[in-house]
Length: 531
Image (tube, rainbow, N blue to C red; front, side, top):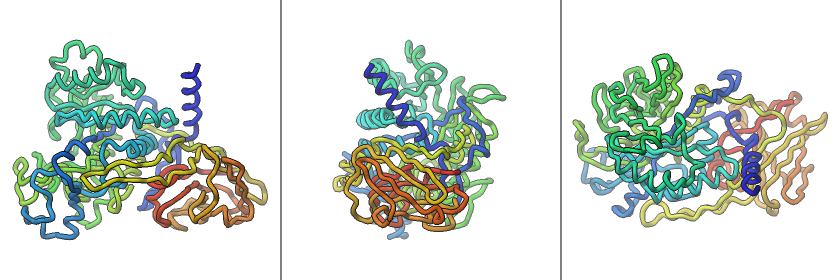
């Protein structure tokens, strides 16, 4: 009975929380598509995200953060000097830029909780762990399992998990994962199933009885070749993309990438100026200095995948962030070489970053997932919910010897919001898990309203910022805040977007919605109310 109650609580917590129908507009003014544009949800379409867990594995080898973007901004001449003191040692890992959540270790459960919510909001069904180099990163996946399991219990529709193994038969790696996770049935609630069995992207050769347990899909290393194994799946390809499995009429899988360390017919490094970076499309590089903003490579690949309409689209990738400094890779040689990541143009992460592309690729991802999978009609009913448990505190080492991240700004955990109206007032209420903290400061339980649903007006589109402490019509009763606003301040015809935020850090920085206090709904998403 206790289990049934917990499951019911999780289900109720998630009602109205899924952001699959929430409106949002990115920093370039691109609105997310609506249900009228993309149609109803398609339950037979799936999105998997390539996910990286290696941001602790190399800490025993080096102690400092080396950020390529910062190095080249401060020392542009360093690109031509392998011995420049700004670089970390040869073969040491460098970040191409700083992630929004800092130079984190992939054992930080605060970060994993954020990822769980963001990927759920994006409509991602599975994260596929990169273990293609051999290590399985047990310390990382254990931390992630704990965080995703807790998030799921709080009502988050977390992506399920699977592993991408070596690009060759290696039964020992598959068996190690089986023995540690699958055989004892650990975190079975998080396993991603494909064709009736847990998915593993690995070669089935020499795996014996495990072939009856898993659905095997063999990861194809090449970006260029058509499938040559009966169960090949892609992880990254150059344009035009191949289809994998299924039939010509109904492919099973395709891979969509943000960028490719590739030339026309061979691999290279993303530090090679001729590689296929974020703005590469139509067979050439876009020469505008800020072309990396627009996701042209990503969109070209998405457009073809949407046309072919496979059952599952595999996306590379979410959070790679680091690459080893080399002097040569394949046929590309230069004073400084980074293969998989280099700079804003030569990189393929979607996870938001500080500065740079910000969260542009995140909302481009969501836009295309909606086009692929469809979406629910918008909830404009006046009753909305937000994730429980998303104000957890952070206290965890970062990358290297010096960094340690502490964030204790989470306080008022918003779980429900309502709106009603009459001829004079629009009435808002908001509820939190525990009694509200004492009203104080300039970022206590702010209500942001986009009255005209136009990002071009107001701050980030918000025409009204309502501080209850400066309002004439508000009251607090335990965990509930009620607030009334004169209707004329919003407009005669009510069709507006809004959100509640608490305990922001830097007024005027919308990226605070991801990192500080609580935002309901998260990120750039808004609730929508219409009469």
